[in-house]
Image (cartoon, rainbow, N blue to C red):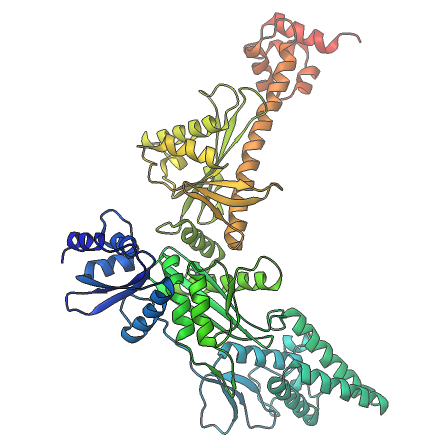
Length: 616
């Protein structure tokens, strides 16, 4: 069937919930989805003029036919969709590929054993503890234990390398017991290894109890050296724990999920807490799409209903009772019911507003952004922020050149505008420009902004050089919906008609709050890096505009004070200020010096001199 025929068929569907199954020319299922209203959802795939991302565009190009299954409720549609996707695994549905394998804790068999985390067991005579499913959790446990008990992480061999070199930096900052110095006995080293392994196996609480008992016992025996060592180890554990609030969170059993996107990929990051510990961190990247709404719609059910996870010998719930998310799923009620049946108990989605849950959702979002940066190979902070900004604004690529505008005035008919430029995420001061209003009467920020952008685009269309000859990838206005509407109207049918334009609005405390688009506001509270970047842009353009306004106001004030003198008009005052720069310098000048200024008559010079030198 042609695309038009598929559209006509979709238009005949009922406005009822159900599942739709799209097939290719070989009758293979390539996509399965659910809908609250089948006609609305399916017809949008085949209607001309509806924009789609790369993945959906390819799916539509391969679509040849579709079937639907009408259900009695949205919940039934969700259950049916999950079972059908699990059975057929269609090409264009998001597929959660599990790239995780088992990992182990390795303890070498040598005079001075080393502890490390590894992904595979080897036939090397070492002792292997595990398996564990979460390499992240294992690496965290090993790093904490090695740090607390000062075990070496260098490549030196002991006892061969003892006293054969200077201790490394870790020894100097207290992160290593400095076996290489020969100041620690073999017995004490082995005790540290055993304590580290005990901490890994039992957790921080149990090892703290044992160390406190050992410290008290040593104190009673007047073995102050051993007591001091135990005291230092207790302090180190508590210090590490205080710095790792994620691991010691009060959250008992809960998942934290956040999504991030760039112009061509979406990432879901999951932090799994069980019994107050972060037991796993997982990230799923979906390429060739920037539609995070579509990814969210499919992700939750597939992720939770396809799991059977065991953490070594200790199983933990694949579906927890609480799931903190950065945005509520549209079908949250149906998902809670479905996952509740799978869990055998109540499951609740919620968007945290404060405290540890909110900080952890922000942490999950940061991990998702970091993963997207690694995937794209754009590691610098500026690149990451621009990728994140492009994803938030729905841009096809990260903006290279960003222009921002602000209007400033100090009274009737005194409006000026500042234009600043950010290139590759950094200020480009050579591109900054200033505008003084020519056509706007009175104080009208909307009209002033429209005039500024009109003059800017005219410069570009007239073939200007320098910054005016560069077409920006993004325009940010200091202002809200009014400024945005005025500028969009001014740019219609110009060379800048296709440039994305957004307003920057502040809250009651004069802090950047959101970006304003034609369809509404885009909150920045979850996107901390974008929030910081947009704030810096807004602060810089405001600084630049208001500095120009103050300069104009100061010059205007000086000029006004001179025009109060008889025989001195605007032109004479301007000539004097242009030559002497300040009113103070004019006051100190002689009559001859004043008269020597081009454009100043002898009469005016005499009047100015008399004004500043008359007896008081």
